[in-house]
Length: 148
Image: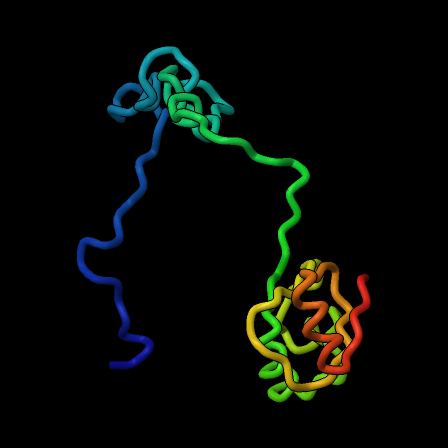
């Protein structure tokens, strides 16, 4: 096989339909688009999600529950995880910048520390929120807490 001998498979290449080239072509007049209506006209575009007049799915489905507009989503870390992360990444302080630099959170994430587990190392925590138990555990280990 050489580059100059390559050919498409038999039957895979064929001439395109030439529409609107007179009645004798078999595809003149309406150019296979049918009579009247939006789809037969130039510049027709279907709207995304349009179901031809049928009630759209987003209106048929029942809406349930309550979406609180003031809800704040936190990236949660337990006190038990902090020791492991400090060892693994060599963190001096548990801050948003350090967590972002080590790809543990996204740039806009808010961080909250919860009080599950034990803490051995002395750290400085600079986070958005912290539970009361976690604050006591960090301060008992000789660390400090600063809310950002």
